[in-house]
Image 1 (cartoon, one colour):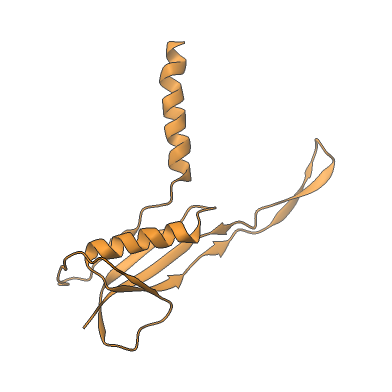
Image 2 (tube, one colour; image 1 turned 180 degrees about the vertical axis):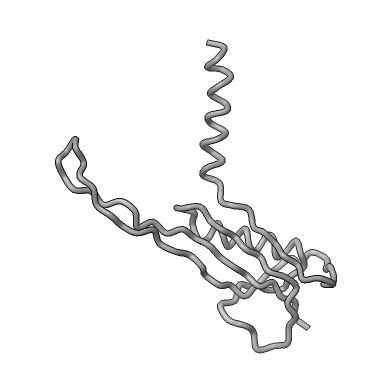
Amino acid sequence: MIIRRLVLPVVLAVAMAACTPSQPEFVRPANSPSFPPTQFVDVLEAPPTRPYEEIGVIEVPGEPGTLRTQVLAQIRGKAQAIGANAVILQDKSRTTPASQRLNPATGQMESTGGQVIPAYRAVAIRYK
């Protein structure tokens, strides 16, 4: 009984950690100044037409099944913390290969794989 009480919380913690999206990694160029946090961050698919400076790169390797909105929320949060006005988003996601296997219990073929593994790279920028 005591072992169950000790093991169950550990198993639950490991299971919940597996469902949590990866934390964003931020790389700031050498000699890049620090900026105060910002409140709003634009997510752009292409560089803006107005002048800007790059202040770093945010990379988020997602876990299979992680929603795009979750990853974008992480990117926005990190970008706000480092003082970015916007991020230029690059989708580096990939799909695992799909395959089929025979389910011995049902005798039917089942498809497996084909799951999207999200991965994003965002160039954090400040408008001039």
